[in-house]
Image (tube, rainbow, N blue to C red; front, top):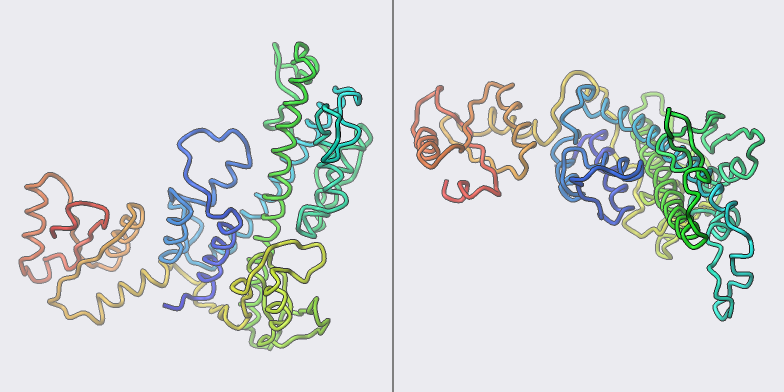
Length: 418
């Protein structure tokens, strides 16, 4: 089934984000230790695994049943953009706090404790200076995305400028609040009476080895934030924004198109039929140039190190055109609405229907949809006697009072004998 443009964009956005994490994301039963883990968990919605979330996206544009501001897929797209911007902001603030914390810890360790020659054959047994190594890598090589490269460099400049003030202007033009949030900061904690305590006051008994180990752990966390999450957040938001712009321009009555200059052949004012976008990073160009670069697992945009492939090259004219009707009123998703259409218009009135559903929250959604459309349904539940009675009542032809649809959970034993 071909999904409407907005629903397709939502599916592609989640698919891209989960691919960036290698689908290595599961619902945690434990309290999240840091903001990064919490932001990743938000992508799952009500799902337990990345695969489950993606399967549900095929059926419905909404993953979190607690939301009330997504009446249709077009509204859901707007909500996703705002959420991704908030998550990007949260990631940046997390990096600001972590850099401040790491730099404070670094200054507490004498320069004599670090290796001078960190070469592979070095006889120096002192630990590597991982913090300055991370700083140098970010400043010279970046973190794999041009916008993320800009962000991490200005955040490093801010950290090293302290205590002098430094204006942080991000790649998207937004300006950071001069005051760094102290939320979850490990460098500043509350002591007795609610007064802030700095690291050196809180941990006076730590020896040099312990301080180096703590700094190492902080650097590992920073690397994950910068190379994995910051770059991934920029790519995800860029890709989703480009897809929505292309879909809207395809439906434009005045013929307006998205202006694209190919970073390969340098041609500009490309026709929509020539435009393509990389799902791996959201960068645009002409289809021929992007396809050739993808064959070499490269992105043509300077500063982008996203490992792409042929399947990541998405043609603009394959994304569909925005239909304004999809943004008006309550919609339940193309696939679910198609089920209702089949039941009410194409399946003979006297026929019974078995509808198999894989997930509990999707089962609840289907129940509400059927009731909303005045379609009577039954569901096997309760003890064995009650289950048997439900099946018998369903099999009897009771006219308009008889349930037309039996809802079955594919993972339940009761479904196999129905």
